[in-house]
Length: 197
Image (cartoon, rainbow, N blue to C red; front, side):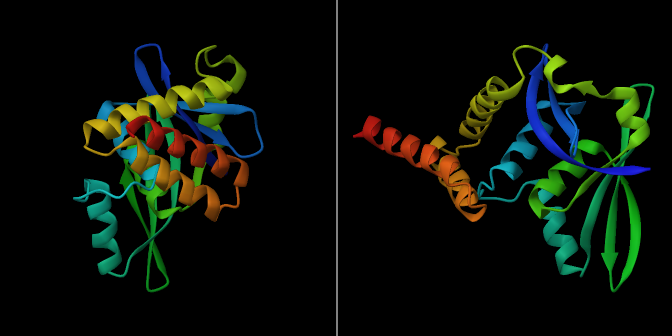
Protein backbone atom coordinates (compact mmCIF):
# COMPACT_ATOMS: atom_id res chain seq x y z
CA UNK A 1 0.00 0.00 0.00
CA UNK A 2 1.20 3.52 -0.80
CA UNK A 3 1.15 6.46 1.60
CA UNK A 4 1.52 10.13 0.74
CA UNK A 5 4.95 11.59 1.42
CA UNK A 6 6.90 14.82 1.10
CA UNK A 7 10.48 15.97 0.83
CA UNK A 8 11.56 16.74 4.38
CA UNK A 9 15.06 17.93 3.53
CA UNK A 10 18.16 17.33 1.49
CA UNK A 11 20.90 16.53 3.93
CA UNK A 12 24.51 15.51 4.04
CA UNK A 13 24.85 12.12 5.72
CA UNK A 14 28.47 11.16 6.13
CA UNK A 15 30.12 11.91 2.79
CA UNK A 16 26.91 11.55 0.76
CA UNK A 17 23.86 13.63 -0.05
CA UNK A 18 20.43 12.17 0.62
CA UNK A 19 16.93 13.38 -0.07
CA UNK A 20 14.86 12.59 3.01
CA UNK A 21 11.34 11.47 2.17
CA UNK A 22 8.89 11.81 5.06
CA UNK A 23 5.55 10.01 5.05
CA UNK A 24 2.99 12.71 5.82
CA UNK A 25 1.97 12.84 9.48
CA UNK A 26 4.96 10.88 10.78
CA UNK A 27 8.32 11.66 12.34
CA UNK A 28 10.02 9.15 10.03
CA UNK A 29 12.21 9.83 7.02
CA UNK A 30 13.51 7.51 4.31
CA UNK A 31 16.98 8.58 3.13
CA UNK A 32 17.48 8.11 -0.61
CA UNK A 33 21.13 8.74 -1.50
CA UNK A 34 21.72 10.92 -4.54
CA UNK A 35 24.78 12.16 -6.42
CA UNK A 36 25.80 15.77 -6.94
CA UNK A 37 23.98 16.29 -10.25
CA UNK A 38 20.77 14.82 -8.81
CA UNK A 39 21.14 17.03 -5.74
CA UNK A 40 21.59 20.06 -7.96
CA UNK A 41 18.54 19.31 -10.06
CA UNK A 42 16.28 18.73 -7.05
CA UNK A 43 17.50 21.87 -5.28
CA UNK A 44 16.97 24.00 -8.38
CA UNK A 45 13.45 22.61 -8.68
CA UNK A 46 12.72 23.24 -5.00
CA UNK A 47 13.92 26.83 -5.32
CA UNK A 48 11.90 27.52 -8.49
CA UNK A 49 15.07 29.07 -9.87
CA UNK A 50 14.81 30.32 -13.46
CA UNK A 51 17.71 29.03 -15.58
CA UNK A 52 19.03 30.47 -18.83
CA UNK A 53 18.78 26.99 -20.41
CA UNK A 54 16.52 24.10 -19.39
CA UNK A 55 17.98 21.16 -17.49
CA UNK A 56 17.09 17.63 -18.57
CA UNK A 57 14.13 17.46 -16.17
CA UNK A 58 12.79 20.80 -17.44
CA UNK A 59 13.13 19.53 -21.01
CA UNK A 60 11.18 16.36 -20.18
CA UNK A 61 8.37 18.33 -18.54
CA UNK A 62 8.16 20.66 -21.54
CA UNK A 63 8.08 17.68 -23.91
CA UNK A 64 5.35 15.91 -21.94
CA UNK A 65 3.28 19.10 -21.77
CA UNK A 66 3.52 19.59 -25.53
CA UNK A 67 2.39 15.99 -26.01
CA UNK A 68 -0.62 16.57 -23.76
CA UNK A 69 0.74 14.38 -20.96
CA UNK A 70 0.49 15.30 -17.28
CA UNK A 71 2.52 13.83 -14.42
CA UNK A 72 -0.19 12.73 -11.98
CA UNK A 73 2.07 11.49 -9.20
CA UNK A 74 5.38 9.88 -8.27
CA UNK A 75 5.47 6.51 -6.52
CA UNK A 76 8.50 5.12 -4.70
CA UNK A 77 7.55 1.50 -4.92
CA UNK A 78 10.32 -0.84 -3.86
CA UNK A 79 13.69 -1.30 -2.18
CA UNK A 80 15.78 -4.26 -3.29
CA UNK A 81 19.41 -4.86 -2.27
CA UNK A 82 19.80 -1.20 -1.29
CA UNK A 83 18.37 0.12 -4.56
CA UNK A 84 15.17 2.13 -4.60
CA UNK A 85 12.68 1.85 -7.44
CA UNK A 86 10.08 4.40 -8.51
CA UNK A 87 7.57 5.09 -11.22
CA UNK A 88 5.79 8.03 -12.76
CA UNK A 89 2.04 7.84 -13.13
CA UNK A 90 1.19 9.83 -16.26
CA UNK A 91 -2.17 10.88 -17.64
CA UNK A 92 -3.24 11.65 -21.18
CA UNK A 93 -6.79 12.02 -22.45
CA UNK A 94 -8.18 10.47 -19.26
CA UNK A 95 -5.94 7.38 -19.48
CA UNK A 96 -3.20 6.65 -16.95
CA UNK A 97 0.02 4.87 -17.78
CA UNK A 98 3.14 4.06 -15.78
CA UNK A 99 6.80 4.68 -16.59
CA UNK A 100 9.65 3.20 -14.52
CA UNK A 101 12.01 5.83 -13.15
CA UNK A 102 14.84 6.34 -10.71
CA UNK A 103 13.55 7.94 -7.49
CA UNK A 104 15.94 10.87 -7.89
CA UNK A 105 14.60 11.67 -11.37
CA UNK A 106 11.01 11.24 -10.19
CA UNK A 107 11.60 13.60 -7.27
CA UNK A 108 13.28 16.18 -9.53
CA UNK A 109 10.15 16.09 -11.71
CA UNK A 110 7.79 16.20 -8.72
CA UNK A 111 9.32 19.35 -7.26
CA UNK A 112 8.90 21.11 -10.61
CA UNK A 113 5.34 19.99 -11.33
CA UNK A 114 4.14 20.05 -7.69
CA UNK A 115 2.65 16.60 -8.15
CA UNK A 116 2.15 14.38 -5.09
CA UNK A 117 4.74 11.85 -3.97
CA UNK A 118 3.76 8.47 -2.57
CA UNK A 119 5.93 5.80 -0.98
CA UNK A 120 5.22 2.12 -0.32
CA UNK A 121 4.61 1.24 3.32
CA UNK A 122 7.02 -1.70 2.92
CA UNK A 123 9.80 0.71 1.93
CA UNK A 124 9.05 2.90 4.95
CA UNK A 125 9.11 -0.13 7.26
CA UNK A 126 12.43 -1.31 5.84
CA UNK A 127 14.35 1.94 5.43
CA UNK A 128 12.85 4.73 7.52
CA UNK A 129 14.54 6.24 10.54
CA UNK A 130 13.19 8.56 13.19
CA UNK A 131 13.96 12.08 12.02
CA UNK A 132 15.67 12.83 15.33
CA UNK A 133 18.02 9.85 14.84
CA UNK A 134 19.24 10.49 11.30
CA UNK A 135 22.29 12.45 12.45
CA UNK A 136 22.89 15.25 14.91
CA UNK A 137 24.16 17.52 12.15
CA UNK A 138 21.24 17.19 9.80
CA UNK A 139 18.17 17.34 12.00
CA UNK A 140 15.75 20.26 12.19
CA UNK A 141 17.04 23.79 11.67
CA UNK A 142 20.72 22.78 11.26
CA UNK A 143 19.67 20.48 8.41
CA UNK A 144 17.81 23.32 6.74
CA UNK A 145 20.76 25.69 7.14
CA UNK A 146 23.19 23.11 5.78
CA UNK A 147 20.84 22.38 2.88
CA UNK A 148 20.47 26.09 2.09
CA UNK A 149 24.24 26.57 2.26
CA UNK A 150 24.85 23.65 -0.10
CA UNK A 151 22.04 24.86 -2.36
CA UNK A 152 23.65 28.30 -2.61
CA UNK A 153 27.05 26.78 -3.45
CA UNK A 154 25.55 24.57 -6.17
CA UNK A 155 23.57 27.39 -7.71
CA UNK A 156 26.58 29.73 -7.67
CA UNK A 157 28.50 27.11 -9.64
CA UNK A 158 25.67 27.31 -12.21
CA UNK A 159 26.00 31.09 -12.41
CA UNK A 160 22.89 31.73 -10.29
CA UNK A 161 23.37 34.29 -7.53
CA UNK A 162 22.26 33.85 -3.96
CA UNK A 163 20.05 36.93 -4.42
CA UNK A 164 18.24 35.31 -7.36
CA UNK A 165 17.65 32.21 -5.26
CA UNK A 166 16.35 34.26 -2.34
CA UNK A 167 14.03 36.21 -4.63
CA UNK A 168 12.56 32.92 -5.92
CA UNK A 169 12.14 31.61 -2.36
CA UNK A 170 10.55 34.92 -1.30
CA UNK A 171 8.01 34.69 -4.12
CA UNK A 172 7.19 31.09 -3.13
CA UNK A 173 6.83 32.02 0.57
CA UNK A 174 4.42 34.84 -0.30
CA UNK A 175 2.37 32.55 -2.56
CA UNK A 176 2.13 30.04 0.29
CA UNK A 177 1.24 32.87 2.71
CA UNK A 178 4.26 31.99 4.86
CA UNK A 179 4.85 35.59 5.87
CA UNK A 180 7.31 34.85 8.66
CA UNK A 181 9.60 33.06 6.20
CA UNK A 182 9.02 35.85 3.66
CA UNK A 183 10.13 38.48 6.19
CA UNK A 184 13.33 36.58 6.93
CA UNK A 185 14.08 36.20 3.22
CA UNK A 186 13.35 39.90 2.60
CA UNK A 187 15.77 40.83 5.42
CA UNK A 188 18.48 38.60 3.94
CA UNK A 189 18.02 40.20 0.51
CA UNK A 190 18.38 43.66 2.08
CA UNK A 191 21.50 42.48 3.91
CA UNK A 192 23.02 41.25 0.63
CA UNK A 193 22.19 44.56 -1.04
CA UNK A 194 23.90 46.47 1.79
CA UNK A 195 27.00 44.26 1.50
CA UNK A 196 27.26 45.06 -2.22
CA UNK A 197 26.85 48.82 -1.80
